[in-house]
Length: 166
Image 1 (cartoon, rainbow, N blue to C red):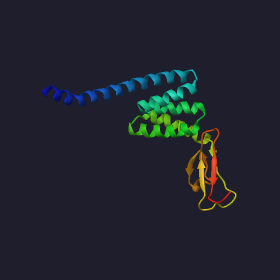
Image 2: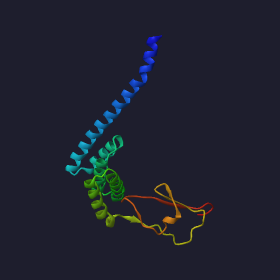
Image 3: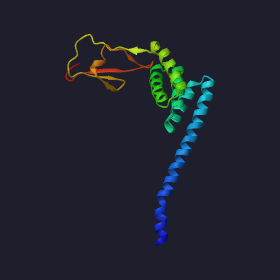
Image 4: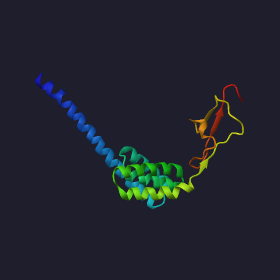
């Protein structure tokens, strides 16, 4: 009986050790992915680098990885995605007092702002109150009408509907 209690009592310690090992493994894998992504970026292969950085950031989120991901997306032409990431990286750099990263993020934000592609939705007629608008499958408020919205280049869908109307 005493032996059984010892085994049960040690179970939480084993689980905690296992969780820490997974975390260490995730950090090691994240670093390997980051290193591979940086090598791909150095060769100009952003299509390969960006997914590696995304996975690295998912496994072990960090300000440096986020900043590199933003640079990668910028070079890929996904300017709106990059802008969101640069703003997130800026916030994180400020929190962490990383002036170097803060400076880099600010410089990219300033350079990107005038280059952002924007979509403006305009209705030629007054829309009924029960109208719904979807942009790429996500609902948006009617307040977006006439407002320039930054959007990555590519195909997008806009769906406008109102019950009982064509």
